[in-house]
Image (tube, rainbow, N blue to C red; front, side, top):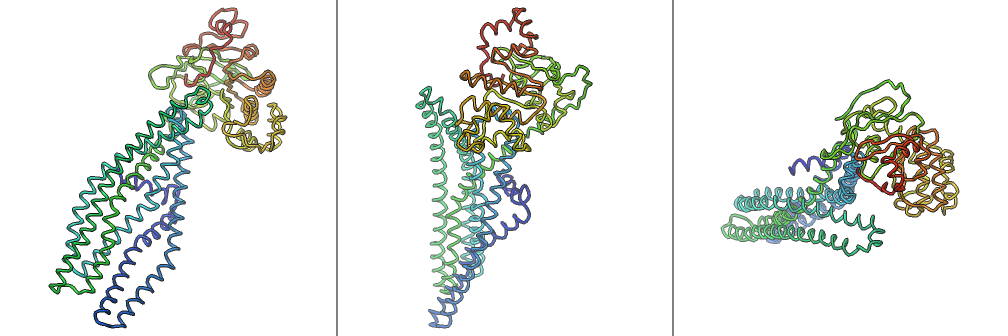
Length: 592
């Protein structure tokens, strides 16, 4: 499992967004930087041997040779290391950018149900915290491991050449150490996975605190929200303590083994010197070479702990990347159906049934047609299925029974881009991005010219207030348009839809109350928007239903009535009941 995650993580560097050139740059710089400790220790050991022999033999030439040997090798390293360090860091940072970009692109392309069932904070945690955590594998952990392994193996080989008895002593203790570390790794991995999940929940709570700031204050629930945050944070604390406990035990064991090897070698080396099996110079060299071996065991526990943390972050990244994209999910239900449109209709539902989770049908065999240029209002109690009709038309959920046609073609025959280019959607909750007025409107049509944007502003009754803003079109609107009034946000949303200029309009009327002047401006803008369009409107205003061509009444996932305003009032059925209540039941619906 760990191997798969490691290979996949490094694939971003070599091929999956990266390149062979980037991979080679990383590999060459990694190998050089990883070998520096061994080489420096090797050069130091040779130098110490020459200096020690010079001291014993009282030879100034050998003493000078040892000093010169060390200075030339270390000086060369000081010149070369910065170059390889730069190449290494460039490859690391580039890889992190690639991973974050791939994750961001994939999240954008996920099916809508993924956003409905997962918390915003979870996505934020994965794209920020988990990517940074996973970066540790290739930014420093692998280098530290290779540096330790290369140094330990290289120095062990050198020790073998110096004295085989000391070498076999090192191998024996090493084998026991590796076995103990393998036992600890599994438990550390399990705890690290739980910690990553807990971090995600903390991020979710922080997201709720920021996003729900108004509600938290208005309902005075700060203490309760804080209590929930403390509970999750306490869980994170307990898990972190457990991981620290395991890693501390492992680190202590490894450091003990390292020093046991070192002092054991001193005792063994001293004995061998007494028996004339090793010279003093070789003994000094062996002691110097033991440094990296001791460091390897001392750092092994830390490395294994951090590796499990990083791999837990990588696993959460791959969980997102392994989710099916919206277009791929759609192909499972693809229907290549075209029919002859004899009645000039634009939209047609043909015995459509749908459920979100296979437990309860939200739509139950509904059928209706919308002709070109018709304005159709959909009304009904909350939870009746009105918003679901819009979600199906937009291709958010391809797993429905029956057929839905747009312009004579089953919508699963279109690509998502083709389908959504035919439709402008205005949700009940207006969403403006935290950027300028200009950018927010331009999202309706990225190819639009400035003159077209100005015209859209005028038709939406937005132009007069926009030019009075501090920076005009360049004014930042704040998160979700917080710097603007409700009426201004609605009008900018209408301007965006006007600019898109799609033949079909799906409008979920806002239920938020506006002052009479703002409401009149919004209604005028909406009339400009739906003119010459085929429109489906989830109606919440009494004035809207009186002006449409036809009204469809939905209750319990079924069409219970259909006709114009006068006809339905005369029937005295569900529509009249809603009318008499002033449509007060038509609140926000969410997932119907």
